[in-house]
Image 1 (cartoon, protein in one colour):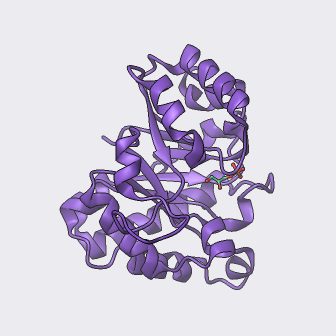
Image 2 (cartoon, rainbow, N blue to C red; image 1 turned 60 degrees about the horizontal axis):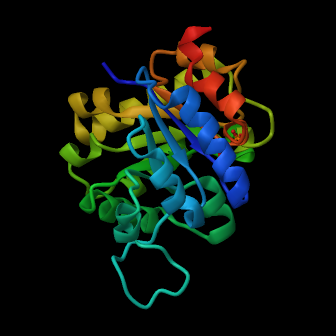
Length: 252
Ligand code: 13P
């Protein structure tokens, strides 16, 4: 059985006052909620503060990115050691916005995943095709090559610890969600790829989240799909009311 995992990726949003309010709202509703694994991913600058607020609650802390070296002359970068130091347990790697605006490649993401694992951080590896790739019938080919590139050289027992987020780029921030059927088909395909690469038991234990315009009113149907094990939520994670509804999808 795979336990559901729901993440809130805040991206580059919020000021310190707003962070404080949001986190307090989340703790009130989700602080003891253990039905699903809940993770929030604030901007780097707020990690330490949020980490201290989350202590003793069942909400975990994650970062939106990191560099692959532990320390050194890498101006502007944040290391895995620092993330662990402020209480992070998860790190999003390979988000499409990083691939698109910051030139991240599968090879970089691969290096980051290996380092994250070495530091005991759980990587949330994002994969997903762009609209033109889907339209031209290449969605599966793209996702498969991202998986192969990003997971190359990682041994099966480590892959088991990774969370994968399928985020079709055309569904991110657009209000256009993949249909539950489209999500299920790609999640199935991802699991088949994992099976080919790492064997059946690894494929069956890796959790695969869906991301892209997840909202309180579409979460339930998505979660009903056999291979959808959670969600990575952007816009709707910026308000406690909507994120709480998403995390507690099983109660409505
Ligand atoms: P939205 O939920 O805003 O579409 O963002 C999804 C996402 O990119 C999560 O990482």
